[in-house]
Length: 406
Image (cartoon, rainbow, N blue to C red; front, side):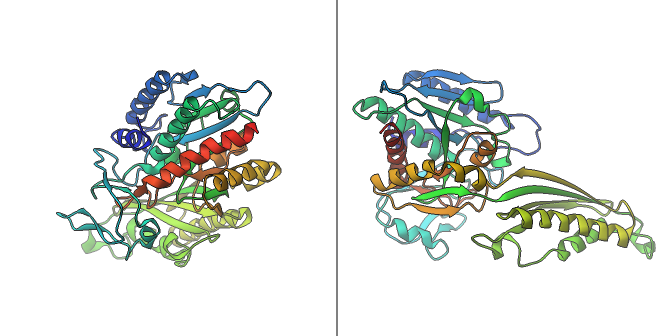
């Protein structure tokens, strides 16, 4: 199969992860996809292939050079975002994109337009893989998986390119912040690795958000509205009051670059009880801790106003900024930088406004910066990936393997 054929096959698997199931992988589609990939890796002749009961798939391309060379890894995740359905994805290829609007779904008037998404114009003349407007695409991160496997096949068919032992790893549940939780770093056995999970061509990332999740429960008191004066406590109104106390200019839609935020992700309730979910993000660890303290402070304020027990807060740290783990081994960034240049890609070192399995893996002892996979507008119906960007990502993987051996 070609790189594009692989990708188009992979997106047919519904691997949308879920935060509610409490198991790993969080959805059965991820395991079905892992089993398919295991068969593919066996068919192309990789070694040390393992698929554990939690959906972690590892394999090895043996070294083709006698002298000692560091063992490196390439990692991508099996799941797609819970934010939008990944079932019955129906992609199509827009050949030689002309710079105009792309009608994804005429029936529902869903249009991918450079007016709203100006990044399209950077890919004029290229071949874009887009959705039908009803689902996400799944380039995050099935493009990464396709690129890794295609790079491995390329190395197999070009033995003149010398490389050390290469490990590849595909894991579940990255999109719900749990991709690295059961990742066996010792069994993976690498000196360092790269996640292929970034966006635009050239992205090279070794900084990410510190991240936490907050769940708030607001208790109310329901009384017949005709007799509710001085008796009713409407938990929906209390929850809304809490949300109004957070700064309106510190939300995802109002921030960029190194600016952190509070992101309201769910709001569900009735008079008696309302549940609210937030994610908290900041690159700076001190500001991150201050954001969590603010949530705790506002919870106390609500309880002082409406009575103890009205509001309860559950805070859970998800991952931390990996920069401090990468800086002592900056040669791995230098290698990726040089590989991009060798592949004709202009490197763009930037901080991730999000997370990556590499962050958690770096704290588990496996330095693991993030490289571009080429997709854009992740997690929604306007997601797309240029074929040429995927090809560049594959070439960068090959170059990294080559440079490490050199």
